[in-house]
Length: 539
Image (cartoon, rainbow, N blue to C red; front, side, top):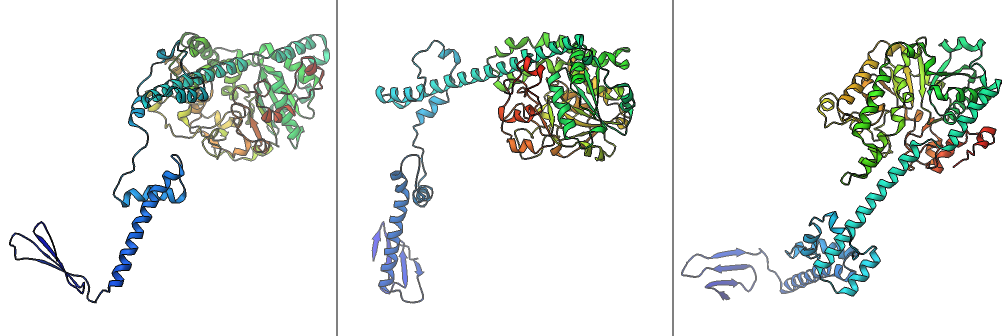
């Protein structure tokens, strides 16, 4: 019999009944039937022994992680850390003092760090100062916050400087390439063999013969054009059926003609023409040239050059990199815009494959003519599929500014983008559309909006103009990204049909990725007298 606070608990000797008598005169009582059979004292003893062991086990689970250390725990310790407090009805608490959290989240202005020489420069300095100074938790957090903030700002500036140097390196003409153009121009003047008609008179009919495989290359870079042409012809199973139309500008025409006159790719047929040789290009107003003139004025007015861009102290390095890239001469070159006029430039052709000058062909491209386009105009590789998320993750929102109402109300930001660089163009189907007019309309809208619809070159308006007119082809035909990242393995790149060095790190520049540029340099004859005299070497 047990009595406490006027309440009585009675346990029968047989342990078969437990009776609770309320106090204060109540007659009622609570009687609980424990079991219908007799429970032995031995059974009760074993039960109490097991319960005691269980409590000791939970205690061990809770404590072992403290033995293992502050930041790591054993398998049993981790289990105890998770389950022990729950079983015992306690919450696990952080061992980091609250004052550290409060201090670290306080804003720290960059001006507060200017002229300071007491901020540790390395982790070693920080640890030495903390051990010798005897600081409390708040001072520890203040010092840590200052050091991390300073390191973040230095990292940001270093990244911006890297982007600036890459911009300068990729925008300038290397002296070796400049030397090559001058040498070939001089050769064109002094050597009749460098002034051959391309193609020869008897092969001219092939230029409009649709039974041939017609390729178009627009470039003002002689060395790059030579690699594209050489890799195309060497890997083609029927090179005698290849016609390569090379379009260049006025200043590069004579060096380009001299190179291909002196470096025959027979039996393939090579045509070299400057823009001013096309009748269509010299008649009336050419929308792309008008757009480029306006575009130049807008860029000079609103971009302020690279100095103004990197002077911004609030924008992230990637945003600054994008603005620097927008200043690249490539994005304001007629060579980059000319593809939108292919139906007018080649009125007799039904289908062409357009090649950028920073690609390398590694397989026979004749199967591209067997691809059924299903009435579409542009055969292209999509850039939002595949395992390589760094390269193949581009959607419309990657190129167009969807914060602008003109863009957001007309397009879906999550729609897949596609790539320029190796494209099949059905010119017959193209002529039945208004793609070119749509292109020029949106270029004009971007200029009117102070380049706020997009910032980079010809792909954004191309994505708009060809919207609904793209036939997706297998990614094998066009591997991208070799000019802005080195995550692509050499083995994967070597197995692609066409590799594209899109990005700043072009394979003819010193900033190229060495392991990837090998696929490009294999098509350069470094023993050639023009290459050797201009000191062009494999990077």
